[in-house]
View 1 (cartoon, rainbow, N blue to C red):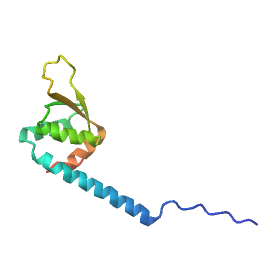
View 2 (view 1 turned 90 degrees about the vertical axis):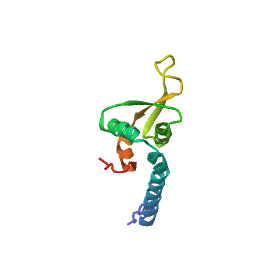
View 3 (view 1 turned 135 degrees about the vertical axis):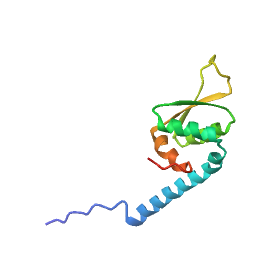
View 4 (view 1 turned 180 degrees about the vertical axis):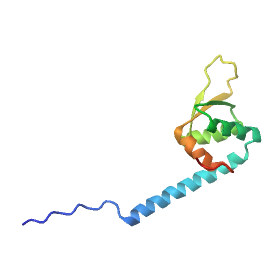
Amino acid sequence: MRRRARPRQLWNGAATAAILMLAMAHAARAESDLSPLVAALSETDRTVLDKALASGPTTLVTSVGSANHALWSAFAERGWMEMGALPPGGPVGQDMMMFSLTGEGRRMIPTVLPGKAPP
């Protein structure tokens, strides 16, 4: 009688633990990279972001170079917001950008805002 070959184990406990540690380190680094940008927000900027997180689909508009633009661009790099230019000929100037929250952003952004508990 022939013995069945055992399937090879592709992942062991040590490899899984190493991957989880790398993911946690990446998340902590992402949060610390955002800390100065979050700290630069005015109270009004923070209120706008909190209201957007609490509402349904929302399009936010901000000036290029503002504290919001810097933070929201960093969120867009992480996939937490989508960034787009305003259509030409609109009621605002060319130095404006629009952003919208993604599902991932609705989950992750509260984790990097002080005093905001994740849902």
